[in-house]
Length: 141
Image (cartoon, rainbow, N blue to C red; front, top):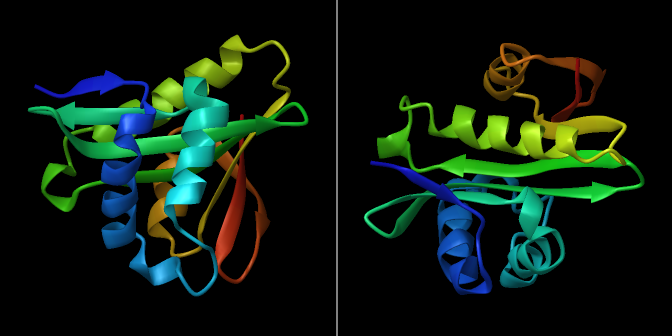
């Protein structure tokens, strides 16, 4: 059974390693390091979530708020756990948390512009508002 919780600082290393393995395609553009993961968890833990099975992290969502905007950042699920609605649940948890915060006026997601991520988010109620070469900016409807 998958359990969903808010990550703690003890989870930084496991989240970092999972992200390092799964986000290898973006390292030339964006830094993925312990400091970044630590920043999300220290400063924005109420908007970050992990999915765990047998006490191991199998997925995560790292998000934050800035200037009345909820930013859905990194979302990752181990390949062998995909197709089990884990990413859907993590996304729903983030959106629900943002909507519960009366200071959040908009919710954005920046994703790679490969079609897969964009279509997955659109099917979940986000709409494209800006398209760039490598990423798509989406907003909750």
